[in-house]
Amino acid sequence: MTGATGEDKLAVTVIGLGYVGLPLAVALARHFTVTGYDVNEARIAGIARGHDHTGEIDDAVLEASALRVTSNPTDCMASDFYIVTVPTPVDGEMRPDLSLVEEASRTVGAMLGGTAGLKGAPGRQAPVVVYESTVYPGVTEEVCVPILESSSGLTCGRDFFVGYSPERINPGDREHTIDRITKVVAGQTPEVLDSIAALYGAITGGGVFRAASIRVAEAAKVIENAQRDINIAFMNEIAQIFAKMGISVWDVLEAARTKWNFLPFTPGLVGGHCIGVDPYYLSHRAQALGHEPQVLLAGRGVNDTMAHYVAASLHRAREGRPGSVLVLGLTFKENVPDLRNSKVSDLVGALDREGHSVTLHDPVADPAEAERAFCRRPSHEALGEVYDLVLLAVPHKAYLDMGSTAIRALVAPGGTLADLKGVLGSEADWRL
Image (tube, rainbow, N blue to C red; front, side, top):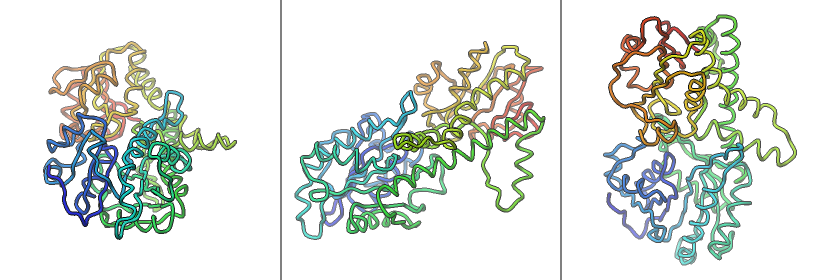
């Protein structure tokens, strides 16, 4: 990869080069001088070789990019913008874990010490720190700003400014990419807002939306995924209700979708880093303010237990007899290698507890990461054995390309073919 040059270009540093940060950095590098920073040295080495293991950026595009990457913060040049795109997960008690965004803020604070000279440069404003990480309203100004000030020795609002532009990356989605979506932007002052809008406006044809404040932009992000979580929870609940009636939820949805304003949500396991996490950020803030959220947590309760419901249903489909099980697909969604918060892990654990012998298979997940997540190593190899129960859990393209006949051939005589996402139609013996 080659480094961008040009003193007239704005300098941008992107902190965190995962599913969100790398596509953003590559897009920005088409217009500005961009440095990408990540603490993961292996990740940096892979990007430097022109390969993105997440599959979000094609190797040819990455190889041709002017993006410069490093795992050493001292290599990051003084910048006009610092954009933080690190994950914001939850802890074991489902409370917001801000440790990564706090550590990133300390890193940026140290970098800001070298940017003070930019403030007085002709045509330049003081550096701006923009957060894209999903947080509850108030985190940028109440949590991150004090860290930035203490670690830089500078004063926010004078020596540097802050803004917020919530990430909207959808892993594996080749339609709603960073250069096509509308970016919500917010800034500490009208002038800072103008500069952030101009920065993002340069990389997306979808335009920018100027939020009323940083807190409004933070709130907009956190409800986008909470809304999806609640709608999917409704689908999961009706799937369970209709199962008791002997009705396929997929048949019901096919009929209901003929109404013009029916929302096309489907049941399933809700994992990943966004939909299964963001509602906890909002509910945490609500509880801190003395409000006990009802709908948010009810939806989370349904979705968090869905894997156990599926496992129990599959066990009943075998009349309570443990057997050999093949689980096809381990990641949190189809055609992406991301294993974070994959609820397939909960499903496998529940099958284990019922005494089933479970074999795992996934053509896109990293085997070492999967082994850490599932405590056993999955196979990438061609499928040849037969099993009492075959569960198509995540319909990766590789499985769909096999076809239902080939998948059916993996089922032992008298066994069960189960289809979690309803892609095999009537070929499956068990559907959600």
